[in-house]
Image 1 (tube, rainbow, N blue to C red):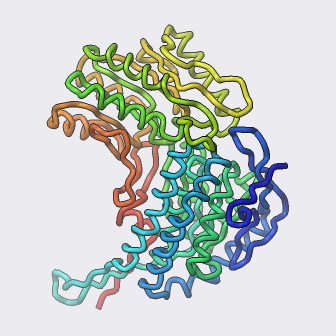
Image 2 (image 1 turned 120 degrees about the vertical axis):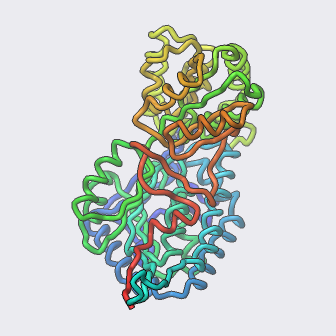
Image 3 (image 1 turned 90 degrees about the horizontal axis):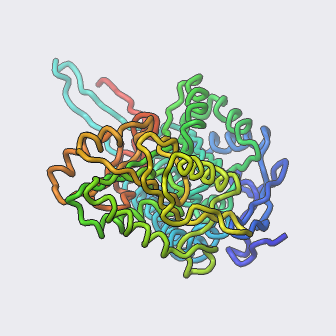
Amino acid sequence: MTVVTELFEGPRTQLRIGGDWTAGDGELDVIDPATEQVLAAVSTAGVEQARLAVDAAAEAAPGWAATAPRRRSDILRRAYDLMLEREEQLAELIILENGKSYADAIGEVRYGAEFFRWFSEEAVRIMGEIRTAPRGDKRIVVLPEPVGVSLMVTPWNFPSAMATRKIAPALAAGCTTILKPASDTPLSALAVADILAEAGAPPGTVNVVMAKGSSGVVDVMLEDPRVRKLSFTGSTEVGRILMEKAGRRILRTSMELGGNAPFVVFDDADIEAAVQGAVVAKMRVAGETCVAANRFYVQSGVARQFTDRLTEAMAGLRVGPGIDRSNDVGPMINTAAVEKIERLVSGAVDDQATVCTGGAAPDGPGYFYQPTVLSEVAPDAAILGHEIFGPVAPVVSFDSEEEAIEAANNTIHGLISYVYTGDMNRAFRVGEAIESGMVALNRGIISDEAAPFGGVKESGVGREGSHHGMEEFLELKYLAW
C-alpha cells in the first residue's frame, strides 16, 4: 500500500465527530485514479457513528448560534489564511485522490478558500428588519435565525471547494454541520475540517463522516428530528431520492444537481475567443464538472472554422498524471466513468458522427480518456441527452437564433449555458431566453464566490455563494410588537 505521508504529517483518515478524530466501524481505500494505486485507508461510519455526529452537532448548536458574528467571521477568515498558506499541499492532495491537473487543483484550492473569506465578510452582515405595520397597530420585527444542524453531502469532482462552499455559509449563519464527502475523495474534505479546527471552530460545529454505502448513513441522519437542513451536490438521479426522503420531514433543502450545458456560438462571434472559451468550459477538470460545456451548437456559417480550431486546440492538450505540472488533462475518477464515455462516443459514431481527434482511452495504468471532438453530430444524437462528464465535445450546426434557443432548452436540465456573439443585444436576448440558472456571455468560466450558483428545472433548487447562499441557512422569525 502506498500512503501519502508528506501532507500535514500524513492526511487525516479518521472520522471527525465532536472535537475528536475517531475510528469508525470499517475502512475504505482511496485510489489514485492516475496510477490505480491505494493512497490511504479511511475510516467509515456506520449507524452508530452517524448518530454520534448528529449528537455532537446538536450539542454544539445553541452555543454556536449564540456566538458573536465577529467571532464566527474571525474563524472563517483564519481558515481562509490557512488554506492559502497550505495551497500547495492541498492541491497535491486533490491531484492524488481526484486526478486533477496541477492547474485545476491549485485553482480549486484558491476558489475554495474564497468561500471562507467571502462568508467571513457576510457573517457580520446578517440583517433583520423593523417597520410599522400598514394599520399602525404594531411594529413588524423580522429576525433571521440559524436553520440548525445542517447535513451536507458533497461530490468527488471538487472535494475541497464543495466542502467550503457549503460549510462556510452554514457556519457564518450560526449553524453546525455534518459533512458526508464522496467516498472517492474524502481526504481533501478531512483536510478542510482539520483547518477549521485549527482556525478555532469549536468542537461539534464541523463533523465529517465517510461511508461505503452512503444511503444508510445519510438516511439515519435525515430521519433524526434534530437535523433541519440538507445541502446536496451530485447527480439529478440521487437528488430526486434525497429530496423525497427530506420531504418526509419537510427539511430545508438545497440541491445543486446535474447539468447538460449548451455552448452556443453565433456567426458574428470572435471565433478564436470562442475556441479558447470552449476549451476552458469543456476541459476544466477534464470535463468532469456539472458546469462543463456538454453540447456545442455552432451557427452553420462558422461551424467548420470553429470545429477545426477546436480540434487543433484539443489535440494539443497533454494527457497525464497531474503530479507532472506540464500535463493539462488528468484521468477520469474511475473505470466506470471511462466506460460511460466510451459508450456515448461509440453511440455517436454509430449515428454517423465523425471523430476529429481523440475518441479512445489510452493504455493504462490510470483512468484516462483522450480529449475528443466529434463533428457532424445529429441534432437528436443520444450523446446530446446525457451529461458526458468527460473530455468530449460534440459539435452540432444550426441556422437560426430560434433554432439555437430551442436546441439549448431541449433538456430536463438548466444549470448553465454559454453564449458567444459579437452582438450584445443578441447576447442578452438569448441569455434571457435560455432556461438555465446561469449564463456565461463570451466567457468560458463563470463560478465566483460572490455570485449565486445554481440551476432551474431538474438541475436543482436553491443557490450557493453570494449573500443568497447564506440565506439558505437562515430562517425568518416574525415578531409582532
